[in-house]
Length: 87
Image 1 (cartoon, rainbow, N blue to C red):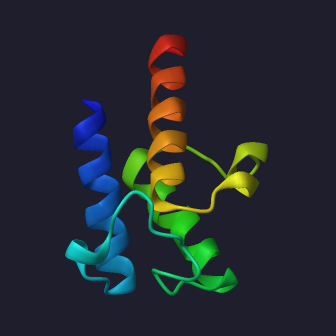
Image 2 (tube, rainbow, N blue to C red; image 1 turned 90 degrees about the vertical axis):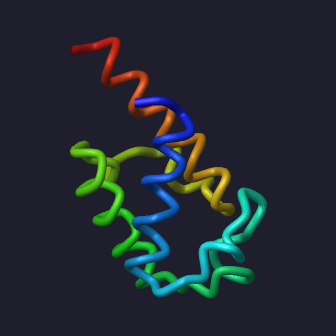
């Protein structure tokens, strides 16, 4: 899976789950202010990502630093690459 395919899957999954306009979703979009997510939505976001990519991220310390859609892209790409090298 290429980085662009990962980004597309993330964006499609988030847009579907939270009924967001894909055109408004930019890598620099902040999750809370610009995309309108709240702390409860973040729990759902983690579940959506875990389901889409088949790995656990709840215990990941790096998840706490995520503020933008681009941060999610980078986190998932890094995690996916780590999993590919391990298995």
